[in-house]
Picture 1 (tube, helix red, strand yellow):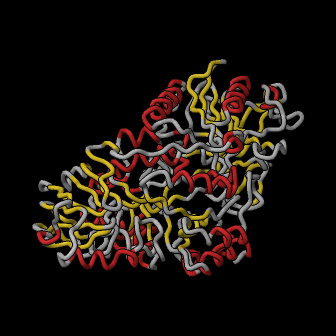
Picture 2 (picture 1 turned 180 degrees about the vertical axis):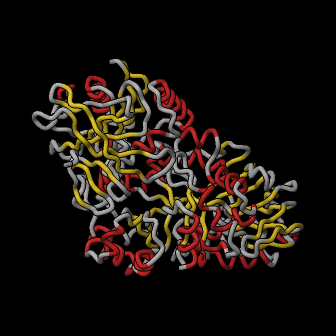
Picture 3 (picture 1 turned 90 degrees about the horizontal axis):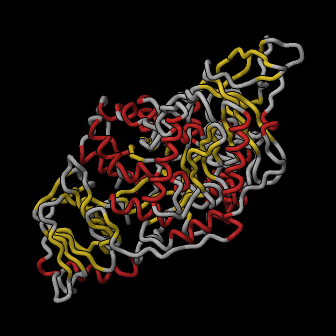
Length: 600
């Protein structure tokens, strides 16, 4: 695959690189005195220099002859030198940051390239929203190698989104240089049952000779997994069991081992590497979704590397999993992922292999961060007005909106409830008995059962899905979010109707976001005016706002890690077992709508 993300293509500078390597032309930069982590051979090499010209590596060896009058010489002072870190699966929108602010946050932590799937903004604003993010990425040094959203909606027929992506739209997107592949194919039923929509979307990507990324969330490693891989899907980040990751690798699929703000899968799935004598070349480390306070407090891929070491993965192996393995997954290792002649000079200096503390970052040979601080300017990008006006709800929302009527004459009713699992993606369908009060079904905090509503917010259709959730542990108040995967409709959960109405209307007024209210007071609010998903404020400011929101969650009784990330999956109809969209409750094992009330 041709790389459009380096300063200059190799064919344009190959003569210069050859001349520098042989000492006929001086290098732009030479790095000396470091311990080079050779991810090609899993070695640590000392006593070698790195000569850089035109943004690429010309030589790894003795660079004495490459140093001229104007050559910049960097003394690594015994630091470890690794290739720039690559995140093979990330949703920038889930950080709640704009692309520019996300880049500012992750580059100092050693991340030089990401493969973002912008399906969040695409579900709200369509391809125009994706193009806004692509344009903003050009204002930063971070290499943003986008994949085209594949599932808009995530599972057709089960939700209403702001846009629609089909095979024709994918075919057009594949003509863009900034698009290197297809975003996670969550519609695995469409792939397994050979539905034209899903298979044709994958087919258009394969015709363009680009990479198809996956999302196979079933705990199944037999015929279904084989069929999914055979359809052309190259990687998957949805392994939650070690055996899932292992079987994917055994079948030539890249297992992307996830450790995000809410999804803490790495401890379990790392066993696929640590407990088996297998080659780890098909394993990558990825973040998927990361909140701003995680980036501030812990870091990005450097943090995930530290977690990998905690769980017994060898340091060099772990670094391979965020460098050459990721590059090979996207067939871009001819340019990215290693410190070798001809490759882009994306380089990270590490204080030690134990700390994975990043002290210097180069992208295309330029120093872009030192000691945790960005050293280059990122030009601002202003989103158009239509991208910041995305709340289109037809009907006025009041406390009366949240009335749930029980069957006439019933004293007790059994309802389907979505039970959430802290820090995990799947949920559990529970059948819960609720007492009828004045002909209505209400939240029952003693059973930890809360009313849950999803309002369509894109086309003013007036559609509303009604259900109950379990697992938040709150005793009072309500919360709402327009970050509600993947359609990103308005999601409201609460203990009482008045607070639920206040939560909903607060987000309508601020253009979307996340909010916690209690007893008629807004305790915490994160405004996300860009598509109801992102904010262009600096990461430090967003971290403070999100931290206040999380404290608000604790104030109403929830101790779940990153609760809004777990809450945001309530409407995602491609994940087992039970989900709620604006169209109603969905059994995500049978892929059919089911009634709220269980007939007994």
